[in-house]
Length: 330
Image (cartoon, rainbow, N blue to C red):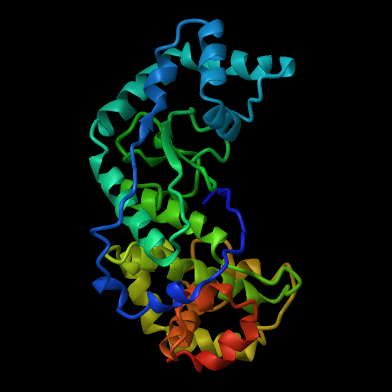
């Protein structure tokens, strides 16, 4: 998947937060927590603009969106951006595609409800959380505009998340396209938001540190979306999740045999945490990103020892989490 914007910020923990972790995630009652979630459909507004002046007025009126999505700040040199937007919205094929997107996503109440549920859970664990404004957009597959996520903004490139029958689909490998579907929109967004609450030791360049970091983010996402299947949380198909669970001892033995946990080799690490159709070093039936999955299991086991979600996310010591988890591929 294309890179998404995340922010690594430390949130101070309180005794109240620690006391929140008294029930299993699926039993937490968030019904009384108030959040304000209203998705703004900016693709409709932008494609209704008639002139470059109207485009400029729109961008100046919606500065948060303009800066986050187009990096438009209102300077003279930003006229290039205005010209590019104008050419795109005047493109006949793109206009037809936008209409198809509009039809496919005529009703997005499901997305609003899922974001609302996720934000309520985040506010339960982290009461200082303030929900970001959510926008939708059709860019014509501008690079890295599938999802833009920050503290204050989530922008969904709906054109990236169209069904296979659509006029156009992103120019991505098939194994990645499987995740560019409607059910993945909210989980991927929350996964990106996890960076705000997950502390990492930037000096630790081991594969293990990467594994634990991804494991924390996956655990965060699963807690904020307790009803979403693990397969969607990690971006696997149901079969891939089954495959990795059935071969976990084989995967573990490979990591041990090859001495991977403390490897800092930047050519080796992407083989276990990067995008690939499968992990060829272990076998063609082994899904990609095995490091993500193993790290998640370690984080789960570590929390089973009595550590709260907040404590776990704030723990900088990946080796300690690894050791205390006691996880050994079983």
